[in-house]
Image (cartoon, rainbow, N blue to C red; front, side, top):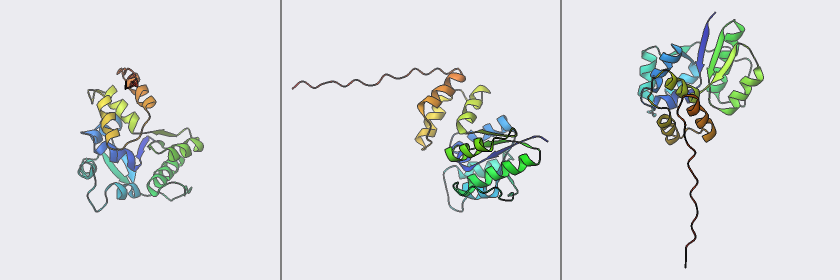
Length: 184
């Protein structure tokens, strides 16, 4: 069987707020699946940032909803969307599928590492931006990271520098401002 790409809510929400961000998913992965729990989180009844882009991605087949798997195993420490995504990945891999799970939250990533399956891999928003740059879908990854940070996406400077270096966008470390003493 083939590889299935599953996503948690966070990558969708942030990529939806970056110009053409969700379209990169089609170019990189073909289509990306999400559980009904994730869908209800990213498309609530009220208006949220990126909602129109998410709806268009669903209509265009970039995003697709998959049937909610049985919820075993349980991960009560995670929010429902993360739990449903990880459970879907585990259950699909048990059926012989290779699954790539897009998830940004540390707790979810740690659980996936603990599961330690050859058919489950993890990635996230940062890697999607890096891959978009590698495929020339964007001119530069640096402004995308800046936009994501403005939106509230948290990522360390070290990780951003690493990705920028890997895609040929060397970023010099900006010198720290020096303190001047005022003469009185």
